[in-house]
Image 1 (cartoon, each protein chain N blue to C red):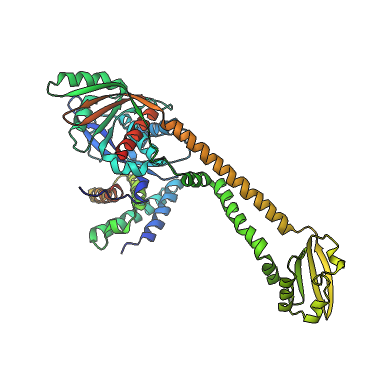
Image 2: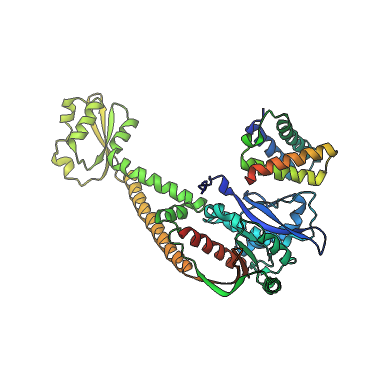
Length: 96
Length: 384
């Protein structure tokens, strides 16, 4: 079950890793941890993202993950599709 | 008619503005309306998708310079998708971003939340003065905006005005009227902040003023405590065998009660000249505090401090309360007069009204003018 506090912690870790720059692995690890946590909950239907994430959290996750994928690109098409689906969900949350 | 849902405080952090971008191939592109989102994040400027950050960085920085604000930071979602085939550059999104930033920093964001869908913008922010420059594909952009039902106002750069007029003239079936240098007086008396609202916004404007406000509240709390409950407070810190009394004694009965409750006997109290109003102490016009000590049955007096710091502090607090209040009131009154002057200013702009379609095309030269027009329309709409 997705927990807003966990997401906040992961998000802050990701921000720190991005600002820290090196080692790059930290940025990748924290980004993917947050990404898969959000994706898995969205896909399994165990949790409705719009009920769990606030608008602020949604836009911050969107900005950070988008920044990560812009730099590191996608491992495969599956990851790309997952991101497209997740980013649409996040955008709906804070644009509504 | 459906009742408008009042936006929550959280909603007001996300300012939505319509911008028009052209997609397709060069020469045959079509305009797409994007609902961009402007969110104040207070850390760093960010753009979604981030690959467009470099394209928009200078635009955001120009907007911030034009409003002389270098502290705020924004996340801007351009609402663009990866597969979108743009044949337009991002610079024309500048006016939309400027309106979003202005709305999120000012007190009209709640009003904006309820009417944002009626507005659409396109224009480049040319420099740090907020000058709006012409854009490419103005005709295509205008065509697409006109077709959106909810849009009533379309704002374009003045540099594109002649191009748009020529295009409308060529269309035989468009019924329109042209307005030159239209004056709109901004009369938002109903929407201007109340006196207490101004007081509050002034006193919480920055960290320093927050600190000053907290001291002011503490001062107000301290004064009645010092004058009404000080004896009780002092007693809390003293043991049973001694007690401190403020001089001169104004109410001997109260002092007697305190002495009794502190373990002094009636016989001992009768021996205290201070309470018998003997000439010994009443002759002395003594201020400060006297400590009455019971040393195994013998009563001793000790004037511990002729300068009562708590009293001096209460005077300082009193002066501070008056000065802080007076300053805030004067500033709030001054701001009201400034608002009235600003509200009475006329805004000049050219526009074209498409009569059959009930659309107004507004031409602007700079961000300040654009913001004034939006505000005037908001207040005019809400006053009817």
